[in-house]
Length: 387
Ligand SMILES: *Cc1c(COP(=O)(O)O)cnc(C)c1O
Image (cartoon, protein in one colour):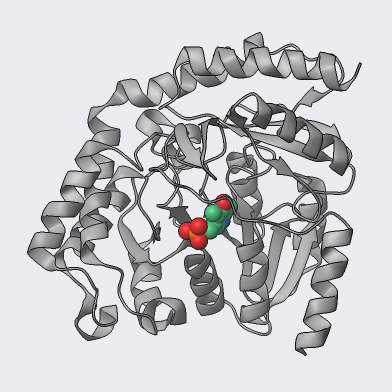
């Protein structure tokens, strides 16, 4: 096996597809040090700049003094700490849902929910651009996976009509991670009601960004329904780690009994849960932070003026520029790096062929000057690279 793996690695390197990790030598922040270089970063999912916020650091330190470090046991044995309980109440309340459940990662939350609620005879209806964890969740559940073209609700409806599965679950990214566009929640919910399906919303990139105070996609559309199972990750805008699922109390109670990725794993460090409560408090009390992110998004869209490359239509913190070829996207990213600006190039298979792109992510921690500098470099890059 090792010989085969080695050959595959060589092949990958020759095709220009070998991935490498950058070594971060500072906190995750918009001004960071990576591989020894000082950079202005538009490359994290820390949309509110909370990963390095003093309130969260202090909450984590105090909680570690009080509760120690390790979770020590699974939630159903002795790992379920008061801090976890407090975080679940705080997070569910923030998104306006009756109950919440913490998971160690978003990946595990998606796998746990889908595999607990669906089985062999059930059916999943999924947008083709959904996150990888949702596709893996379908495999784990052994349910039938029906994938519809991105945002194509006509195709989704045809699939729902044709399905005879006893349980149907529509699964979508609330904000698509490589495109930045938002799922049409009211229309999706109407289809679920019409065809007796449930709706799993993965709000990894909407929580903290969309809606009033960053309460997420439910607040953005002002929608509520017992059919909605809401999931948000907590290592992105919330600046910590983990994920939570929220929804109807019966669904949450059922997940506690039967989600394997909840039951058969050690509870996360309680101090992280205390940091999450601090994160929700910042979101609730520092409305200016959320507003600043919204202002930067609007400013960037208004002032960037590209001739050949295409800024995708997005109102979220994810602002991708489609360049097309893999080499072209890499050259653009490398050019920006020589200017001290870090923006990752995203290539297939993460995005469809011929749509390689630069994935810019804006953060409330950026200043207007940071964004102006990015715009200026992008305008220059188009002149230099397409000359
Ligand atoms: C990041 C992400 C996840 C996984 O969350 P983690 O907590 O990082 O494991 C799931 N879904 C989407 C859409 C994501 O962007």
